[in-house]
Amino acid sequence: MSTEIHPSAIVSPKARLGSNVRVGALAVIEDDVEIGDDTEIMMHAVLLDGTRIGSQSLIYPGAVIGAKPQDLKFHGQKTFAIVGDRTTVRECVTINRASHTESVRVGDDCLIMAYSHIAHDCEVGNNVVIANAVQLGGHVQIGDWVVLGGVSKVHQFCRVGKHAMVAADAMVTKDIPPYVLSGRNPVNVEGINKIGLSRRGFSAERISEIDQFVTHAFFSGLNMSDGIASYEAANSHPGQDVLDMISFIRQSKRGVIR
Image (tube, one colour):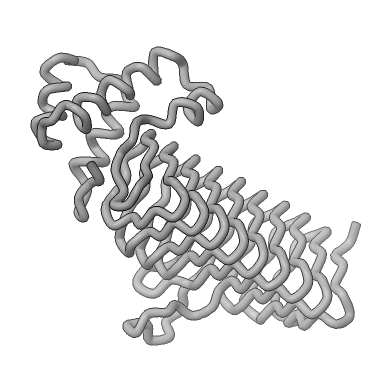
């Protein structure tokens, strides 16, 4: 199939559209936009200069991608908003361009649900699910396979580690380690994401080791450093999953939820 553009859509002749791209009624696509093969831009979606969309993605009505960042320190420099392959961006989602880095990035195979906002300089990994009305502040980092519950908020510069799950309406003001379930307000670690890890093919042994580490680090009554030291004293050769968690915690600049 060839590219199909509705007669009422406004598509710049300078935009670069792949093969079999479909553009719906009243969509707007500006000059410096690239769209991969087999992607559909539905009616009333707006792709502004600096937008890059991968292949086989779907952009729903009312989504606005590539707007200037909502940052008073932004001075008009050339930056980008990049959405990966096979990613769905639902109604009225806003994904801004970067302000201090080169690009905002949303990975492959993601689902970004309606009315969510991804602010300047954010990095969203692959296979991420962001539920309705989630708000990401600037410079937020979301790891692969993260699930963010509806109406949750992530404060600027926070990180959410891979395979973590955040409950609906949570207010995240510190880093959330990989593999954990987190919820309540203030947000805390409630355990590990056992069901999610099992669905993604983690063995019982890997899940058990992660669980043991979380027990030492978060539920032993020790502070974080002592909890990690306690685990390391009892386990001289931790697996890669635990090493990743320890590295994430030690690299935290905002602190980690408890």
